[in-house]
Length: 98
Ligand SMILES: [Zn+2]
Image (cartoon, rainbow, N blue to C red; front, side, top):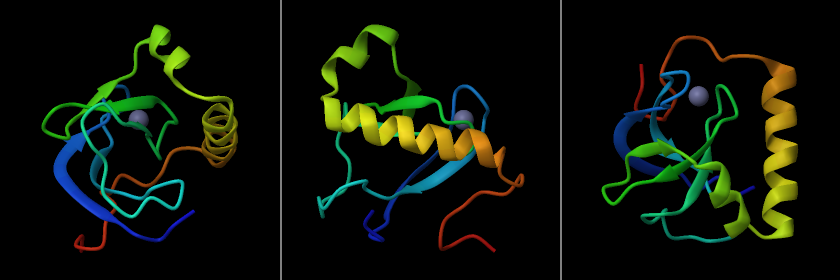
């Protein structure tokens, strides 16, 4: 995984309400996310998608078909780690958070 953060408009996971203000790409892409890109909640593992203004919405089940095999494997590994670790402390992540 890259350590290149992209700061986002503050948005919360629609499932668990965890606040997020940054994202980190799972591959070598250096540019930030765009509308329609997929992401995953680091708190609960829910699959999310960026809206036109980079807010987060829950991914629809039929949208899984848009993911390739390698993306599904990365997602499955990330969800396994998140679910085995459990929820994060109730504090927003990101470099600008005190
Ligand atoms: Zn969540």
